[in-house]
Image 1: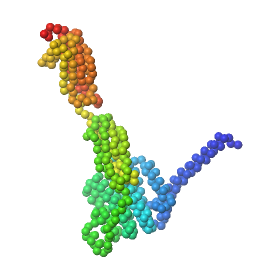
Image 2 (image 1 turned 135 degrees about the vertical axis):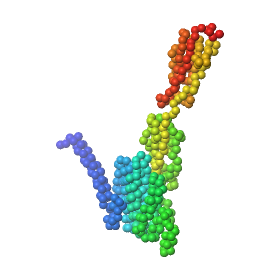
Image 3 (image 1 turned 120 degrees about the vertical axis):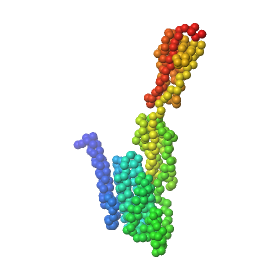
Image 4 (image 1 turned 30 degrees about the vertical axis):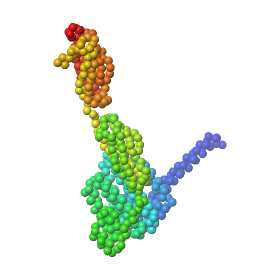
Length: 442
């Protein structure tokens, strides 16, 4: 008969095996849903570059597994480049899902999927921008984004050709928003000429659809010619497009500023990000910097510079909680200030009768008499003063001290060294000749 402890161990083993079975089951289910899209077995074979499967479609009882798998893969991605590629692939899947849903005449679900496509493509550009701010050369990644986007637009254009008039708006907005966002990104990164070249390639993707569909798309993208519009308008009536306000818009960063032009090593500054969201969504701010320390959250933070000189980037990612994010960075120069410089040493004798300042710069003072010495330095804030005398006594600290002559005659040098917080310094001295003859001063 098993003892109490043996029974307990057996029960714990059974619980662990059940938990492991649940995890494995979920992973297998995710794999099945990803490999074999439920409810889409009879859809036309369409692919977008490396993506040839829409996965589970909205309305499927297993659609949540697809969403869970996407979240996990993004969480496990090791860097922003990989996250951008994953988001791009998800946008491709969503474009295929739009095509499949409209092919099955599920136009309302197709319209909702247009919003998901736009969100995934926004994330693609946001992660690409974040990879750029990490210092990576994103040229190769941007080539892939352009290529996949052209394929996505070709599929969406073919979908638009076969949907009823009332269902066109969602597809048109997905085409317009994603293309306009990518064109703006290309112009910002590679220049206007490269953007115009991409726009020409984009227009070529719509050659496989009828003229009416081409005009609908070109009018949205601002590339339609008057002749083309008039030609199509003469044969068919094209109603003015309706504005769909349910598509989420990307946040906009209006300013990103620091309260200083430059910083000394280990000094701090305040950085402010002003952003807005056209949809009125609440915004969150995620700050990052490769060097230095960040304190604070929200739209205002304090950044403390590292010990070494250089130019450092402080980046902020502003998210609207609806899947849209925009990233911007600010470069701050960390520079050592000019070293301290001593302008003058001002001498004020406590007993002027027994003090003579000679033209040679040497001062004669009677034994055991005192003299106040003030060190005048440029930009004295944060400076330290180190006083030394070969003989006699020094009282006080800082820029003003009192030196008392010894009781024996001779020459005495009093020296002050001024230092800043970064090891830079300047030194100045004054020479006293101590006399023991009081009558010599009469």
